[in-house]
Amino acid sequence: MKTSLRMCCVCRQMKGKDELIRVVKNKNGEIFVDETGKRDGRGAYICKDKDCLSKLKRTRGLSRAFKCQIGDEIYEKLLENKEI
Image (cartoon, rainbow, N blue to C red; front, side):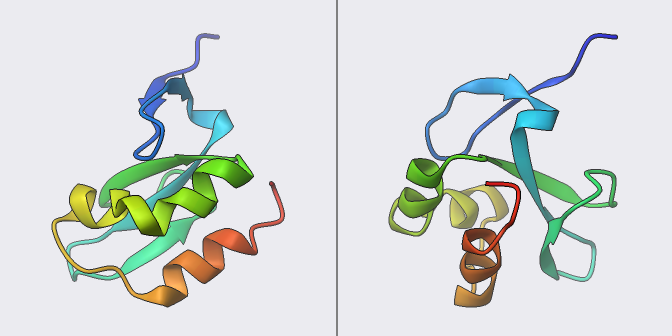
């Protein structure tokens, strides 16, 4: 089975969905980490790599992807992700 490729919003590399963390903005404007990878809404992807996660806030990759300001709680949730 072939995996779908997605681009990391920090390093801009194409990787399989299973190699990335998905962050979602739903219709109500709520932004959250999608552990299942299947929640409804617009998704942005970040590598499961400490370098990409540490650069995420500085590069404002999520803010650009969702066209809004991203709260610190999202960045904190990503940094404490146990899959990294």
